[in-house]
Image (cartoon, rainbow, N blue to C red; front, side, top):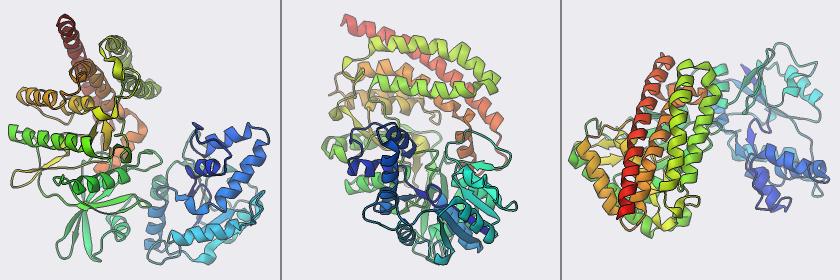
Length: 552
């Protein structure tokens, strides 16, 4: 099979580079609040001589600063899988020799080839391309003519204008790579990620693909893998070498649909914890950012379905160790936990953003629409308004002070804990790790839908957390005010199954071919109703506790 691919914004990714170069060259101020190439382009074009400025910036990015470009998420996996299948890859780019308004006359084509060499494009063990199969064209017409000469079975480009050329070959499949898919066209296949492009051209990801990718991470040449089903949004594989070494291989969600740096966050946080003698977590071994893969120590044990008081004791010890570490570690070297809630404003905004997303799809789901209109929204307005009167002024609008925050795994509970044969616990899944309010950690541990805590364990957990965070005089009041909000937040989270992208991730990660989406949605809707009942109960408790505080 002959597969042709465009280069800029299809293979090479400039999403963060344009802003960085614009700041470095003093084209924009470092305080500019925008992000991404498209937003920056629109901003510059609105300025005096904006088109000229934008063209100059393009020349700088594609030339002098080309080394800072990333690979488009998922393209490395696709190219490596094509190499394993012996498909021919051609890169055909509409790229002039020199950039506009470039006094240094740096060859954009040379810089592109240099970048490809650093990314292993011409290495037989990686992408296995031939340098002579990279073509640059001065015009779009010349580009289309080259595609025809190469007899490409498929061509992938981010610009629809290429496919609209009169002479575009009729026997070449057209794939428009559009990461912000807004339209459908009969003459084009429009796909928003390289994972989908790969599935369209090559079929489903196989174990052979994953083994080929992971040879960059595992030193042993002979190993096999087993996919572990039911692990959230990431795909987990057990890799076993010929000499019985065992690793956990994690393939993270596509970064185009989930912009969080999940691989780097987890890999680095586990390293940091081991460096600070918190060893009941897996060891980080190796990673590949371009392939979105992390290799970790395999933890051999069992899931905890009915936690005991001893199990809870070990969880509490772990939280106490995290809290102690939080007091002494350099706070500037670690980012916020995923969806951290450091103020009531942030918590409310998160819930309302989730509600808006669900409202946008609710017309297609009658029961979801009825639930949102009749149950969730009336209760939400009441809980939201009452919370403002309960919350301490310290973190009403502003972030909780750093000294009161804790290093949190964020997605924390027995669902992410493995019990070893000797009874000790090992804690896994740290791709959301970072700074957060201990109130969120406390509430989520109780409310998480994967938890199965008895009343005794819940009371013990609350009792110990209240004591652990007692230096924060506002902690207890903040927790009581927050519980209804976190229940409503979980009511929104469990309904993610109605969002198309989330449902696709879930199906892919679980490895279930006959995944029943409708059945799963109905189950999640029942959970959402349950969380609304919890929100009502905890809101009443919050009122009672507020009166006690007021009368004290």
